[in-house]
Image (tube, rainbow, N blue to C red; front, side, top):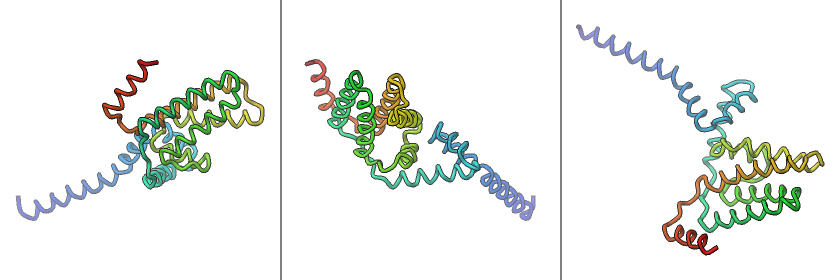
Length: 196
């Protein structure tokens, strides 16, 4: 084979590889976004004018999310939040309306302590969607019920459902990205549980 033919073959292969990379890049980006956002990807696409616009919005969410200084919770902070949550759940029996408001406030406090912005529900959804997409629908449902409760349109069963939804997000926020416990912390927690 002549040198010219080899060069031509190499150029042809390079052109094919460039075209293939150009064609596959959007598909790889789409898969990355689907894996990252899960059900939130489908929601964004259905709420948007185009798949491209939705994917651009999701990529912007990732970028905004990367600018936050998110931090894991210490074992002490986790335990404190768990106790607060148990108190909110216990309060539900006697005062469901108040317990729902407390659950919403506790979730917001937990978000703030982790480093998430807490100003505005839509902004919260946007930022949470990056790492907590699997439980984001729970937050939407709980928030919707809370709003209906404020205008007197939620039954006690609705409020119970809202508590379940808040608990799902609360647990995800509490455990996702939590600081690993040191052996000494684990032993102290184990001793505390057996002393009760």
